[in-house]
Image (cartoon, rainbow, N blue to C red; front, side):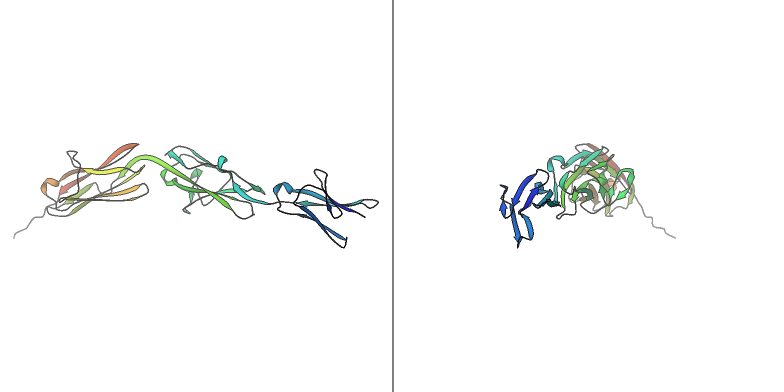
Length: 272
């Protein structure tokens, strides 16, 4: 009685008895007292997937077939996956992610910062599924890093980071456009700007003269990504300081300004 192992799809004889016939050095065979015969495949590869037959040359011949499934962890295909991009606000954006593996990987999208994704139809979602992620009329709130995550149940799960930068012209908002102050009072004027790329920000008076920090004025600004909070402090208000002030914001896409009017507040002594 002789036992042989074959590769079913190619009808290749791998082993006969205790002899390895194939030239594949990764194949081996062992037996236990000629009763249990085991086919060994070292360094298993995806190409090893398929059916294998154990055949006994009795009369009639007996055989048994087994199937080897080879699982492969996911791997993101960079050449088919989106890279960092810069887009104008209001444009349509498509992010693509491709991955290989076995079983075929599932693709999901998340924001790196953990915030919800403002998806189409204004639906807030933590996760978007599928190899393609469409954003219609992208806005500044959707700017940030997105993670394409590929998983198929075979560790490790892999991901790729795609940074989406949204460019837009400056926009200014002012909470108090009319401010009153007494002579000698310290007064701070404030306005908020949003712009990306980052804007140049400054203040002017009615004659369009740019205000500089010094003995009379203090200026400060704090920014967070595309938002800037501007402050102009008049250290001691004089009569000549009354009038209109402008906060101006400009970048490569445009320029805008906002106005604040400073007027005098007076106190009167009442004698009886």
